[in-house]
Amino acid sequence: ATMTVTVKQPSTSNSSANVCATSLPYIWNGLSLSAAGSYTKVFAGGNAAGCDSTATLNLTINPVTSSTANVTACDQYTWNGVAYTQSGIYTFNTNNAAGCDSTATLNLTINRSSVVNQNVTACDSYFWNGMNYTQSGNYTYHTTNATGCDSTVNLSLVINRSTSFRISAIICSG
Image (cartoon, rainbow, N blue to C red):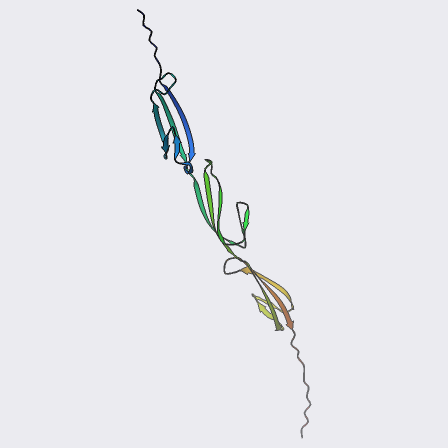
């Protein structure tokens, strides 16, 4: 008698998955996975020949990222293409290099530049910011204010001339 023996082979499969941490848990072949690693599942009699089938998954978890910047600026600050003129907390959402969520936070303080206008009338001369002025006119002084921003002081100065006169007197005795 002749006997025919057929040997059936089990099967294997390997796969990889890259997922963002915000997509957890990752469901694979009925397993709920929440950590990176290599996972194997055996399906008894699961292949077409009726033999075991072994599936292996190499799971990579990519992180979401975040960053925070504390910025103080004068009058306005441009961040990610947007000009901000008010203090506040602003966020910018995008994707990181792994394709996962990335959130940048800006803690912004806007300080203001200042302009002061002064009208002064003086006799003969006026001493202002280290200079002695003897002519009427409009003068500007640039400095930095208490918050570190530009400060402009505009002086509108009127100089009046003192008048002097001589008094001649003839005194007669007697």
